Length: 488
Ligand code: CS2
Image 1 (spheres, rainbow, N blue to C red):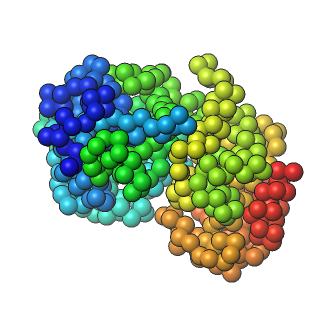
Image 2: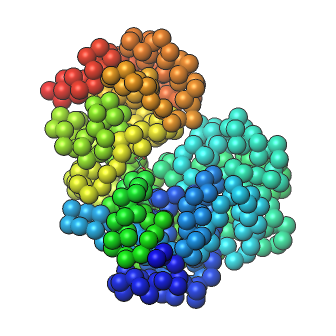
Image 3: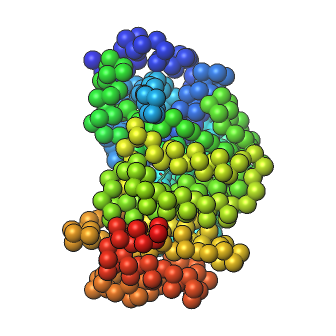
């Protein structure tokens, strides 16, 4: 028997939603119906509905794949969220997703939904690469493939900025008030960044619309956190055991969750504090902490881990030398965060090390290794630059950069090739080809990729040498030897 509204009464009562889903209308449009959205924003919204009610259920759009939207569609939007910790699993059925939408099959649905005044908030988890924003210029990147396609056909958009612009155009034309747009991707100053990219897009297709957006749409920034591995067959069979029903859309995640949000919601918002969300005036310090102390070490774990033969993050944490390097990186990053009144960075670090070691979470290093060019700047390069400015030793960051470079050659220690899963993969292949065995040449080629390394970093003699030295050990002696040497 499958999970849906008609079978919900078979679910153990403490796992059922504490509200009647049918009694609440839709007020949020979400872009990016992946596992993370289901483990995070949808769970917070579920808690808010249970505690404070309101018409805040979610129309959630999958922009590319159709599988999740179809699975959820067949289950009335219901799915199981399994929190897995050392003390065991806790599960509950989430009922906040009212309308799963597969945009690939119905491209018209998303802008149409956004034009509906019932939608008062748009949230996004589309991954760093999907936006098509030039982060240096704080403008749209007209060369981004999806952006270029949408600029050429703005009334039939398929990408993030195009869909937002077209939905807002219709909304404005109909005379409705603006929604609040809340970015939930791991990008620095994510609200300001999305605003700049969307204004750049709109200016190119409709300057009046751009002006309306600039004047009426709020773009609060937010920091999101919850470790969420891609769901597997094991996730689904565990859900079936716990629930007594089959669930094709089950998600698993760690027990920890965090959401820090700037409280600027002119059109109202759910009581997300019911789920533990924190509202602050400025998210930037929290973002910096999370990107540098969690995501930076995560990238180190991914690149060094894949090459050292560790399948999961927890395996890396069981490798004494590499775990020490992870902790060293976290400490170096902590020195580049600054003071945050509400947070003890030592305790935060201790928690992170514990979270990474969670034996119940099978988080693939190869999953985290994807999209390195989109992740390194805010996670590793920015704190590296700050460390140099402060006269601090950049060794930890140099090691992480070298590990990415070694990974970017696309060959395992045994010579097996793997996909980088990076939007700049072709470019990377072209410049690394034939240089795999030459650390100096490899380092130069990758540091010279346009727009990736800040000049102040790639032209810093000391930093470059620090990366080259480490990369040459990785290339010549192998990753396990490089880890051992670095940790010594
Ligand atoms: C990870 C993040 O895949 C990655 O790049 O670093 O998805 C990380 O698990 C989340 O940001 C945790 O909140």
